[in-house]
Amino acid sequence: MSKPHIALIGMGLIGSSLGHALKKHDLAAHISGYALSPETRARALQLGFVDSVHDSAADASKGADIVFFNTPLSAIKPLAEEIIPVLDDHAILTDVGSVKKTVLDELTPLLQGRIHLVPGHPIAGTELSGPDAGFAELFDGRWCILTPSGDTSLIAVEEIAKLWRAMGSEVEFMEAGHHDLVLAITSHLPHLIAYNIVGTAAQLESDTRRDVIKYSASGFRDFTRIAASDPVMWRDIFIQNKEAVLEMLGRFSEDLTALQRAIRHGDGEYLENIFTTTRSIRKSVVEAGQDTDQPNFGRDQTPKS
Ligand code: NAP
Figure (cartoon, rainbow, N blue to C red):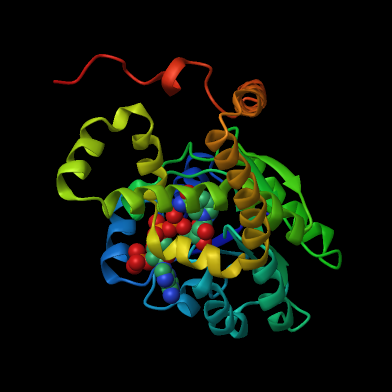
């Protein structure tokens, strides 16, 4: 394929980052865009990460070689139903959603044997949302997992893989269900725990809550960053990855009960063993290049007045 016409459906953090990265690396002949609100569409044009915006997803997708869905998961199927009838034969649908099996299962029956589907998930993001949150380097050196079915055209799969590599990502292929299980423990459960602990703090009496905020640098603030993530996006992730999340939550609850028992019985050896294992996992994460080895994530340690 020569330089493709790419449609971005959804222009928040991920959609705008895609637009910026495609522009920076000169990867598209034309980038058209659609988002729900006229404000986002106007802002996207102003920021310049798309060449045109349109009043409907179908209009934005007409003539596109590749369509990226960058919306909350629950919007993808209705959007696919709207745009597939207007797409040219051999157009490629892809997405960035954080759960993959539902995307594959819901969209495959809609393809009419003439459209390709290559679901994807960039393992990159921040807790911010909206068209101003994006930047071209978001995907640099980060994994992008593609989960096409075994029947998908290899040419289409390679086209999407090539785009992600050109935007700086390392591409990995995975079966969709396996992706959802892995992400349940690496991403979805940590978010659930963060939402829960920050939610618990929010219910405390006001004087205690005040002190929780004041002394939050002792650990709590790291949960608040994750718990500030977009509520709609995360609502959809938990609903669509229900089984894998419940499986991991079951294991987590058992392990938490064991920790609770060790504390109750003063079983220091058990606690020390677990904490030693977890420290070695942190070391592996740093060695795998997934985080900095600087103390406290390299934050400025100067005390704030
Ligand atoms: P976001 O910043 O909230 O942006 C979502 C975009 O989707 C907005 O432009 C929104 O339009 C648009 N939208 C919502 N409903 C729509 C609809 N029915 N039709 C058309 N556009 C619609 O979200 P995001 O963080 O970019 O996340 C987008 C997707 O990326 C999600 O599926 C998420 O699972 C996945 N993802 C996110 C991250 C992350 O860290 N955030 C990482 C990897 C993957 P308006 O602006 O007009 O509301």
